[in-house]
Length: 396
Ligand code: NAD
Ligand code: MG
Image (tube, rainbow, N blue to C red; front, side):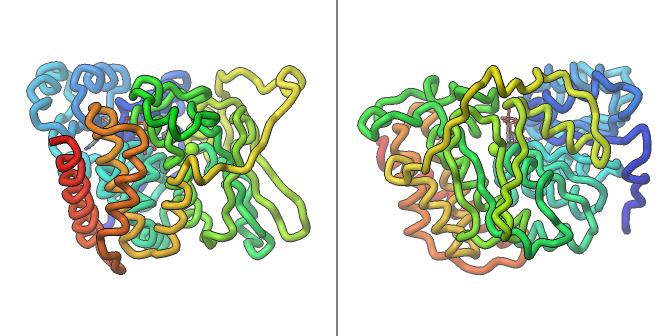
């Protein structure tokens, strides 16, 4: 049965936030709180932090709250008793939250765990603000097919893709020659491979420009984040891999660029603050006030650019190869990377082992075409198991 959605441009706009307790989720709530008359909250979800999710629920008064970790259910239920808010737990409850009728869904769960809920949100139509890049990396063809079928409006939240979205000529796509994704280069932009071998998780999560969750911060340090974003851009803008380039830009002021056939290059600029791209999707197709510092180009005085170094940052090459190979190759790349990042954060493997492990698992597993969510999830699990065994064999 099709869900009848409220008018997408209605005011107040009804919203659901998947991954409300994370970095993107908290920034989204910050904007909603500042504009209480413009939004009503249908549902929010979290992973395992019952205390924060309950606090957010009491503030936003959603109809439905779901937490992935069933062990956290009693604490959440207790904290929201008497509030009249419906509470549920488990992976199915997160999907149920995504399926509820609302104008706008923020997909900001981290990792492939966000795939099924994001797909559920896409399948019901309406506006889906997409932060969860891993879902496009592991199941991009499937996701974009469902977007076309459901008529959902997929608005990218990732700052680079949001920038491209703002300057991309969707009406005359044959005029577009190239997408240029900017990359800060992360905290180890100038480190040698030898020095990278010794970096700690604390050093790796400390991003010079952006304040983000742990997983994406490590991805930024290995530059796998830019590799994942290359695959994300390929799907969002139907652009072949060879027409997407990466440009190191340490100041993170130009968020990305589109080059046209006549030589014009259009870019979007702003402070490195996720509230700007989130606000773009929250208010779309209008604009809303955001309390970020205004960009002062004269004070900045200079912006720098460089070609990325794929020898020191092999993740860029691995992601390009996986995208070219197609089928489940990006699914495997993503799953192996998630396991490797978790292993690094837990102190089980070194920083350089992250991309070594991804390289090894992508080379070892065969890749095949997929046409269902179940097939994607099977490839994802197989890669996780192999990556886990690989880490065990190195650490025992
Ligand atoms: P985060 O770790 O801060 O938050 C992740 C959220 O997902 C939390 O609410 C967590 O509870 C939830 N979650 C984790 N595992 C879950 C599971 N198994 N089931 C249900 N929920 C689960 O991450 P983040 O930095 O906010 O990033 C979220 C997504 O947005 C990622 O895909 C990231 O790549 C993307 N993104 C983030 C930023 C940023 O500034 N943080 C920028 C661009 C893109
Ligand atoms: Mg980004």
